[in-house]
Length: 417
Image (tube, rainbow, N blue to C red; front, side, top):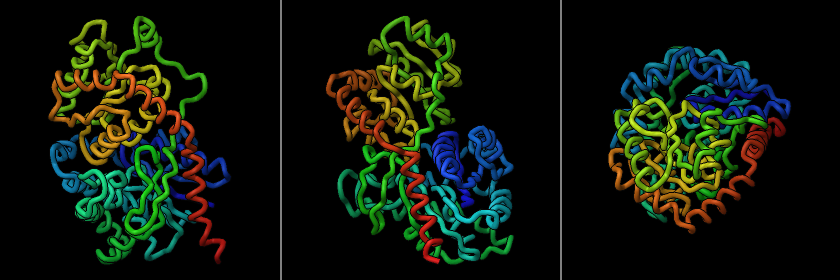
């Protein structure tokens, strides 16, 4: 079967896509993945077909102040802030989608792309399935939806989720308009909402972090996170190895692709809070803090998380879906500084399951707060719980289970014909 995976986002969004794509390809399917020009090499390096969107998505994200608009806003407004990026990319996205659609037998959409798949399928049907890496569907349960703002079960969580879907639909409008320019009718808002709530869907993340509950009237399967592991024998940089060997395990501090002005302040507070708690630090380079600290801090351009994280005493990160999954898999306690979108949800859930300190949102960080967070996760109870949950996550079969779900959904209509 020729399967198109309609993907988009940052590096963390493409890593699980490539893991699932490689698993599908190993089963004999032909797989193509949509990717903006800045991430097309990642897809090619994974041996998958590339359907290139000829724009630099992360440049648009940073230069368009999308990240700045998200700071401190409600999750609905944060989703709506992505509309600027959609407007800039819409003509090229529409071109690529219209060109690729006839060449594939079936479609796997993701959180950022499924409205357009529904619009195209209304004119030219294809079997399709929605693969989510975040719990982006409304639910009454606080542990099952990124839109929820309350722990436990509350109808207000469902209301928050329905409110969050509105800006999400609006985010897709520029691309829907561009597709209409190619003769693909927009359809009604009611049809779009029905597609959102009824398209076959699963969440490719760990049930340790997202509870497997009924969402939008149906039970959503969680397959485990599709990690893309480093090749066997992968090692860390020699300088980093020397740093690790020179003392007790340090803590890691890094906030991924976050580009807010607040990132530097949050990282500074995190580093100094860790130092005040008696830790050495491995910190992600790129915020201008590199010359500020002594030999207790090692700055790195990046390192494979699956190799680095298990060797840390604690992991401070932004709460992205992939980073949270990798940190949880490592069995190491976490300190989460969430910025936007799904990150507050994962920060809260990591704390609720006992593997992380209470969330410290960006904009509310301080040296004292972070020092307290690092001390909190140093207790034996948190370390034991992190190790226990980590072992459970390592036992999951993320890429294989996701591919199983995709095949079960996409092949079903073909067998019925």
